[in-house]
Length: 307
Image 1 (cartoon, one colour):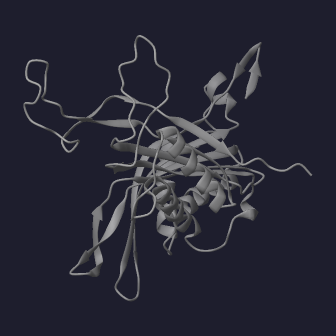
Image 2 (image 1 turned 180 degrees about the vertical axis):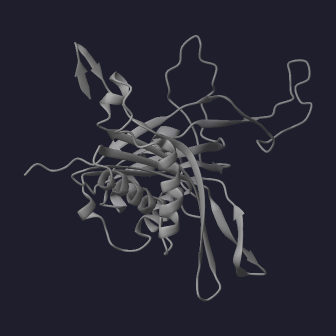
Image 3 (image 1 turned 30 degrees about the vertical axis):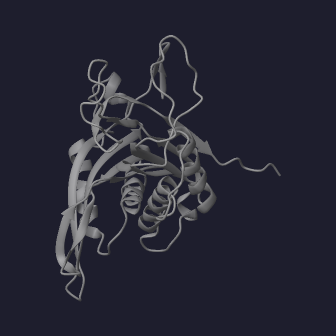
């Protein structure tokens, strides 16, 4: 940020949606695969480019794009999206004197290994549903801010959900119920407590494992035990239990944000005043609808104890 004759300039520049796929080939013939969409944003001392048309301190966005491919090639061992984002951010802040901080955002496509007749295929993959996301910010001193997340985790249970006791007024038509279908598409984002590059864990694929573990906790909390499940009095209550379970399980996560739209499945009813029973439905046929839908969002932070 710079002040110019009573004006304040805040600037950054970068390259968006750099798509790269990487294949790692093991000696045993097994291939590993990742596809990433990379967004890079650099904070840099390039004021002359704005005020004097002097581009001598600018890292070209074409250079950023090509750096993604070059660094992907240099990664000879399989790594997580988080680790690749850290590699890129470290490069831009250390290689270029003008760059004071780098923000790297990656969305990983959910390619999953296929199984043929119960055996995992060596080099065959299918596209899944939910996406793995991460955003890493690194400055020249090595200070780190890192978040990871999930987008598009669609979940549904056909029972064990209700909604009662809410405010009723002349505009309220929704009936109270202890028996309804519950469906949502979870978007989650959590921040790691690591605050410097030197504090990062050294275990390979640490963040890939943590992503899978967080997803498992979210799913287990939403559904409950396979026999009987768990009752949900509201999307809000379930969201809170899911967030609390993640913070309770993983001490290296400092906060988590969840967005869970309430996707509706409306029971079909063909009866009317003149025809009390045309077809008798017992909550087994529904009309799926996702517009309009309720929106529920909350962030749960870990409170640090004061010494």
